[in-house]
Amino acid sequence: MSTRRLLGVVVLVPLLAALALWAFAWPAARTAPRDLPLGVAGPAAATAQVEKQLRQHAGAFEIHRYADERAARAAIEDRTVYGAVVATAQGPELLTASAASPVVAQLLQQAVTRQAGASGAEVTTVDVVPTLASDPRGAALSSSVLPLALSGIVAGAVVTLLGLRGVRAVTALILSAALVGVVAAALAHSWLGALTGNWWAEAGALGLATLAVSAAVAGLAALVGPAGIGAVGFLVMFLGNPFSGAASAPHLLPEPVGTIGQWLPPGASATLLRSVSFFDGAATTGPVLTLTWWAALGLGAVVLGNALKTRSKGTTPTAGERELAHVD
Image (cartoon, rainbow, N blue to C red; front, side):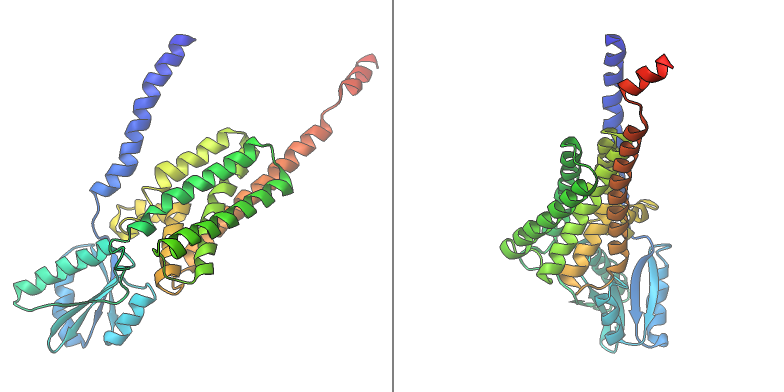
């Protein structure tokens, strides 16, 4: 038995290390635009050359056409596109939104400037929705994904290990997530100044992100036992965190990593937090629904697990009932 355990450890540790390196390093090493939503604004005759140059990057950009600069700005503020190239009489103008992704904003500036430079034109860059001057790389927001995931895992594990069930477990999970949201908003918004949106909307987003994870942990544990804690923790930390695109953007990750990441709590929470903090709540429907489904299914599993255990105890004969049955 000891030899078998030794072999298990020897094999398992390198396997986990390889999996962690794959999950974290592979997406980062393959970062590149993939159908990145980008606007092109201006008269068709003026934008034709711009579109032709952009399409030379096969599969890199998803082109959205707009009549003028005003429409392109509105699309950026609504999070329909990450940026836009506007054809003007003075030359091309690049509109970016570093608040959506500083990495994408820099990438667009390099790509458009390089293309315009080949034709001798100068590019004017305007940051429509900028990051904070105190945090130009958006590091504070992207760094919040891991603590939220960890707090959710810890909350779900504590509820499970304390033996809370049914309504008590649900109440504990909701209240703890709400408290995490308030505390996190107080730190990130009021103290650090890293978030600039509506304070209560940010607190709600942070709390919902925590509840999505904690409910999933406690829910699966209620159905399958303590192993559920490890299963959800593995999913959130080894896949959800590196696949979230929080430090870059979902459209820069290899497919289907970018899409999968938005279906998991870390990716959805990062997208939601950007929207409520910098874009006045634009494009929040998708991430809110994702996090709500995780929370609802997790809480439902907590209640279901308690009901199944109660029913199992109710149908299991007591020692006295077994003795009477034996006598008969």
